Length: 396
Image 1 (cartoon, one colour):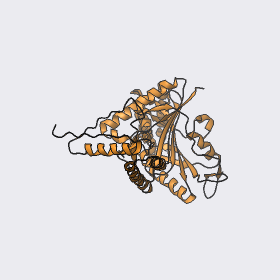
Image 2: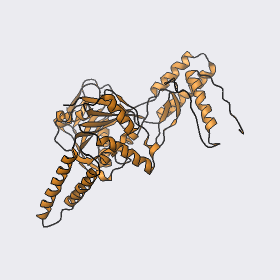
Image 3: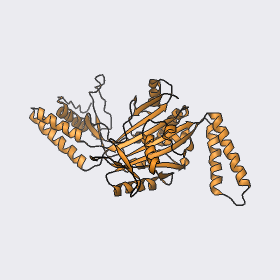
Image 4: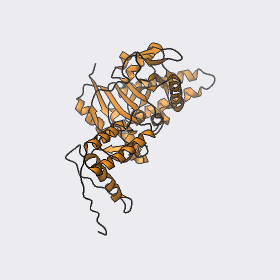
C-alpha cells in the first residue's frame, strides 16, 4: 500500500478567471494533473461558520493599549464597521484538502498541485468534521447527534451519490451553488481508482459490446441504454485523446442546530443537485462508515457498497470547482475591500513577508486610486501604528 500524503489548499476566487478562455485554461490545468493520477486520491472542501470576532477583539485590544487619541478614534470607528458587517451577514470559511496515496516525494506532489491549481498547497493534517463524540439516531430520520453536553455542536446527515450526468457540468454548476447555500457543509470527491489507459479502453469496449448484445435482443428501444452507449463511445474518444478514466463518488455532510432545519437543508441539497447527480441519505451503520470520506481513511477501509461512477479527467476537473470559491479567509491584516463576485471582506497583511512591502496601484484617472490609497494608509496607521506621508502629484 502506498503512503498517505495529505495537503491543504487555500481556495482562490474563480471570478478572476471568469472568461471563456480563462475557465477553459483552468479546466485544462486541473485535468492535466488528474491525468497523472495512478493511485487513489480524495478531494474535500469544508465550509464552516466564521465571524469577524477575532478582528473585532484585536481592534478593541489595540484601542486599550494605544495612547494616541486619533488612533483610538479611528479604531473605534473601524470596530463599529466590523460589528455592523458581522451582524448583517452569515460568513463561512472554506478550506480544501487533497489526500493522495502515493510513494512520491510530498514536496514534489505539493509543487505539482500548486502549479496546476494556481493556489498555495502545503502539507498538513486535515481538520476533523466535528469535535467530540456523536451517536447515530434513527428518529425522526437517520442523523448524527452529539453525545453528552452538546455545547453548541450541530447535528449531521450524510448524502452519498449513486448516479451522475457529468457531461452537463461546468465550473459554475452544480457544486458552486451548494457553497452559496451558506450553511455548514463538507463535500468529498473520492477517487478510489484510476484506470491504466489500456485497461480503461478494454473495460469500455466490453461495456459497449454488452450493451449491443442486450439491445439486439430487445423488441423495443431503451432510450437510457442508447444514451449510455453514446456516453461510453464519447468517453472512449476522450481516453484516446489523452484523458484518464477515474471511478468517482461524491459525499456531502450537512450540519444544522435542530432537526427541522437539518431536514430542510438536506432537501435543499438534494433538489439543487438532482439534475446532475442522484443522492441517497445514508442510514444505520452506513452513516457511521460514511464519515470516513471526510478523513484520510482509505476507501477500501470505509467499506461502503460500491456506487462509484466512471468519469474522464476533464469531467473530474469540474468536480474540483470548490477550489475556486473562496469564502472569508483569515482576518490577519488590513481590510482591502470586498471579494469579486462575493460578499465577504478581504484582508491582507502587507508586513507578513518583510521582503515584499512595495505595491503598485494602477487604474484609469479619476477612478479612485488616490482615495483608496488614503483609506488603506489610514487603516495601517490606526491598526498597526504605521505613520505615513501621502504625496499626490497633479498634472505630471
